[in-house]
Image (cartoon, rainbow, N blue to C red; front, side, top):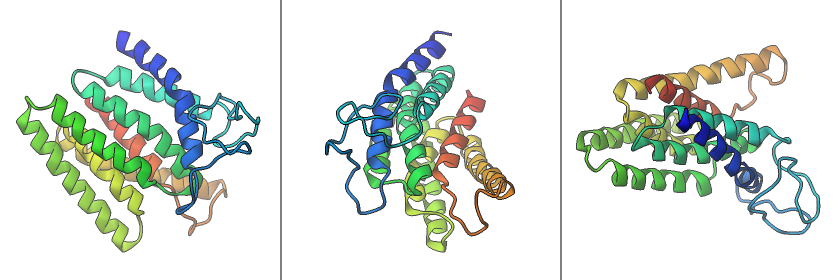
Length: 229
């Protein structure tokens, strides 16, 4: 219960910074981070998404980031245990931003995926040094999932951002075991298929329209962690 409450409060507290990050990074490849009319890249934004300086609204819909951040915080608080809880929180924070950015502009920028991967490696080494077998499994899973997604990116169905996100999720899921790596990967593809079918049935997309896969990867991993905990 304590973890659930703390996770929910942490998600709510982080939401203004997560909304600002999602707004800044939701730009096409090659463009600088987004700013508002007052030419400032805000590091926090209220739930309305309006800049405190010029009142311009941009980014995700009002309250969307806040609801997702609280939901992720609740899930992380429910599943968290020492020492993997720190890693879950780290991936959860970046995951919220990545999901909104990918949904908005169909890309997972290096400015988010690379720090996420680096921080994941540091946290694994810092908290899992007493679990040599687990660390080796996390490394192998990160390599394996990364290679699979890079192959898919080379063939066309996936983006390079998905391939850069995959090692982080592989390492996280491998903490719980190889079975959960496979389950998490499968869950991502299953969610993407369901999302694509729903968009087609509601005529919100055409068969050849691109589908942001990052949110499905992240949600699949989160659901798998909850099942494994």
